Structure formats: C-alpha cells, structure tokens
Image (cartoon, rainbow, N blue to C red; front, side, top):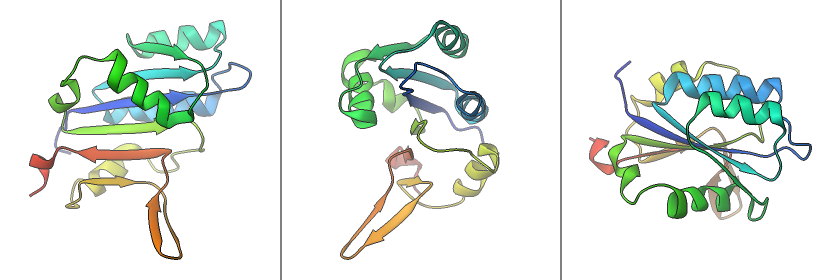
Length: 148
C-alpha cells in the first residue's frame, strides 16, 4: 500500500470515563493507517484512560461534552493545532467511538479506498427521501491534489 500521510482526529466519549477494550481495538487499527493521532475527550476520563491515550498520542485534549463529535473536531482544528497543519497531510480522518469495529482491518479498507477517485468517504451511506448523507462517526477527507 502506498504510504499516505494521514492525520486522525479521534473523539472519545464514555459517560463513565472509561476506555473500553473495543475503543482500544479501534485506536490500534487507526494507528495502523495513520501517521499522527490527535485525541479529544468529550467529558470525563478515568486514570486508566488517561494513561492509555497518553501512550498513544502526545496530543490529548479534554473538553466538556457539548456539541458532540462535530464540536470536538472544530475545537481541535480551530483552537488546538497550528493553522495550516492539516494541509501537511494527504488525508484527514475524523472518527469517534460510537460504533463497534472495524470488522475488517483498516489497512484493507484503506487499500481498497485508495483505488477510488473521491474527495471524501465514510463507512456508512444513507438516503432519506431527497437527501443523501454519510454518517459522521468515520469520515476520510483527501487533499484535492491527490484526486487524479
């Protein structure tokens, strides 16, 4: 697989402040495809979770659980990282822990999607009447120069 430079912004929420085994699995899969991972915790996080995330990333941010994942992404992009940093990457992954999986390795999924000519993609596509959408729990955006 061609080595793409990817940045992941991972939003974590657990009402009890836990990082469950399924969360740890998802993070390990993200580490297999992403060069850098920024973690933003919405709400509380216990000591075990703090240690786990600090072992994964030097960039762990905590914020109140307001505005859900979209506000967490906005917070990181607008307030935490230097302006223009995202443009240093080929792809930006926005992911949260509101799903189980992946059930297929992310390396395999990314290998398949690298063959597609798209500006963005996600795991779950839906249609309701006149509008179509991709659910926000896993989104990948490509730099426009990468589209050929």
